[in-house]
Length: 459
Image 1: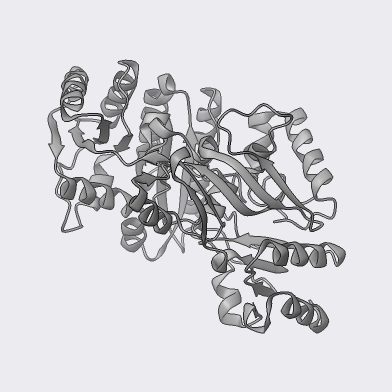
Image 2: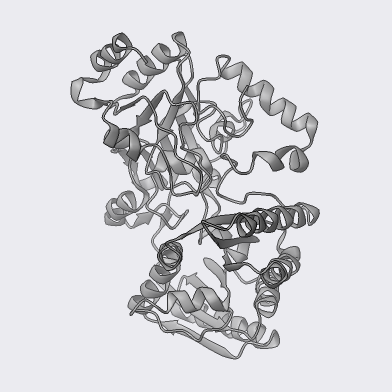
C-alpha cells in the first residue's frame, strides 16, 4: 500500500486509528491456530459503520484485501490476513446499542467481547447463551458461527441471531432480518452472512436473542473406565429425552491436565461434565436421578451432582482453560486441532475411532468435546524437529474428518473452514454446492478483497 492510501485511511478514521507499526501488524498477523502468520500492511480501528463503509470502498476501488478482526481467538486461521492489505480491528466498535429487555434481545456492535457483554446483561437478568470458551468478540462469533458448551440446549450463534447490519465489499450497507422471532420474508440473508468468516461482508451490528439467567442449576460429574463407555453414555443421556444445558466429554488425559489447576480435583478417568437448568430444585433433582441411572447403565463408576456455584464455576474454568494448559505443557511442539461433528447416534463410534488412532499412529494428544451436540475435538502434538511426527498429525486429522463425513457429519462443527479445512470442502458438500458457494462469493465480492483465501479459497 502506498503512502497516499495510508493518508486516505487516516482521513477516514483519524491519525490515531491507523497503524503501520511492526508491533501492531505482528499482533494482527496470526490467531490462536497453528497456521503461519502473515503480516498485514496496515491496521485500522473504525468507530462507526460509515467509516467501515468508506474503508471498504477505498479497498475495493484499489483491489486491496480486507480482513476483519475481533479478538483473534479463532482456531482455523480464519482471521489471518493471507493477502496482507488492511486489517479492520473492530475493538473500538464495542458498545451495547440497545437492550430490548421485554423482548429478550440486545443490539450490539461487533467489537464487544462475549463475556463483557454478558456481565452487562446480567443486570437485566439476561444472557447470550452461546459460549465459545474464549472471550471472543460478537462479530467474530457471528462470522464463524461460534458454538460451545451450551449449544446442546441453546443452539449455536446462528440460532440466536435475528438481524444484522453488514458492509459489503463495495461499501454498500445492508440490513438483514428483523426483531421478530418469526421471519419468512425472502432469502435468509442473516444466516448467509453468519458463518461466512468475513468473506461476504463485514458485520457492523447484530441483534441477538437472549435468555433469562437460570435461577436453579446443578453441575454433574460422571466418570467411566473408557472413553467409548463415556461416549455411549452421551447417547444414552440424549436418547432418554434429558435436556442438559451443557454436556462435555473429556478423556483421562484431559482430566489429568485439568487437575494441574489447584481448583480442580477429579478422578483421572474419561469423564462427562454436565449442567442442568430448571424452574425449581425439585425438577432438577428429578432429572438428575434419571441422569445417574443412565450413567450407571453405561458403566459409570463415579457420579457427583448438585455441587455448589463455586465448584461449578471451577469445573467450567478448568474446562475452558484446557487448551491453554495443553499449550503450556508442550511449548516446543506444534499442534493440530480437530473439530468434527456427527449425528448424536454416531458419536460413540466417532469417539471410539478417534481414541484408537492415538495408539495406532503413536500420537500424543487429548480428546474432548461438546458431546451433547455430537462435536468432538482433539488437540495433538508433535516435536518441531520431527517432520515424520508432524505428518502423523495431518494423517490423524484426515482420518478423523473422513470418518466423520462417512458418518453423515462435518469436517468442522464450530471452528469454521478458515485455512485448514478447505481441502475437505468438496468431499463434504460436493462439487455442485461448492461451485454455488464460489458463485455467491463472486457475486457479492467480485474483486475478491474480503478475507481472501478463506472458505472457498482464492478466486
